[in-house]
View (cartoon, rainbow, N blue to C red):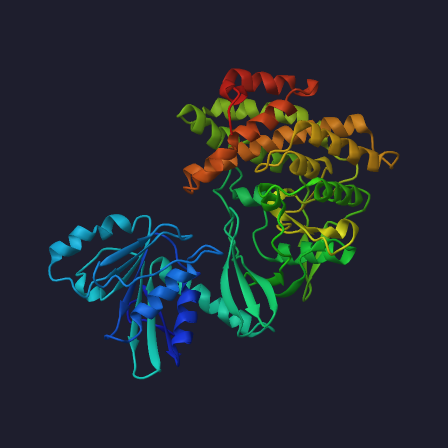
Length: 516
């Protein structure tokens, strides 16, 4: 594919020569990886040029894993809608359109707000004001085709990013690999699977950028809360964990300035999915606890090499970071619950209460705290031995903190119900593994567990409300009752009675019993 600047300043264009229908389908599948709702694709070309072939392959690329369905031509129906794909998509064929009134009846202006709109014969559409359009002009004879692909708006940025990705892959052993969609998380990162021969790896697309608005000291939230802002953290932390002997994803290749990495594919036995399918989780959870106990016995560095003379600093999980996280509750969860912004005084009161209890959770010997040590980021690798059976992903936000935090993350999982009795058994098991070890006192650890458990639940309530309000990801709201239950349980600790009183008076609905 040859990149070129479009004559229009607001566009970016590439040209691709295709020599078979199979190549055309691969290109369509590749572009489906870049799609987002609120965008359109205009397919230009003569009859028989391959527009329908492209459209079907594009829609197939949006299909959820393991699903198959018919993709009929909309030549006679004018339009087909697919709402069961990972992104809702509309496929319209305007060849038989004879008047603007027929266009209006299709309701495309309304559909584009929450669909990807794919249009054959878009010249029949007339002028539109859609800002995010990918225009594909197909020409050629026989089996050879030339596609000129021009993007504007979000498609412009997506095309440019795709060229960076293709150039990176071409420098690795995975040049020529087929690219398919891979489910990501709530972050700004994006993932793909690369398939070549019998092998599969994960492509991580993580362009450097801060996550969140500036706070009072002018730094963005991601900097204050010590969230990874570039892929160097992924490379450094994952590599170091692997060197020790843990099953973190092996990093095959990376480009820090480009924000790209190719990492080991640890499989599909993700704890959250296993639990959802009714698997017996006793052995995986026990091994995950053993891994944390092993980590707690080690000395951990605050600087880790990345390569090429670069290093990654592992920051302390200090009070500034913890306060930034707890402030997410008055900033986002308060208006979610009460319908109005929290007064400035509420933010101050809340911060003061947390500053009173955070000293109870200051570790004497800080260790690496992964912060997201929970079911979506743990994989079961039964063919490996001991604690290596626990696969680790999403480790880049690692900080130097208290070992109780990751145990909280595991036993008070935001997405999976864990019976109180089972959580208590695993807590006892952890304490038994560390009993007699230097600096471990169960009473102090239990207090830190309650403080950090309450802090984490508070943070997550704010995050889930923010994901719904700011990002339109409303599915996270279904987990709120579970998080409220964790918060209530942690606030039973006597050292947190003033914090509990604040919730009882300011947000009493948090303690109302609800059905998840």
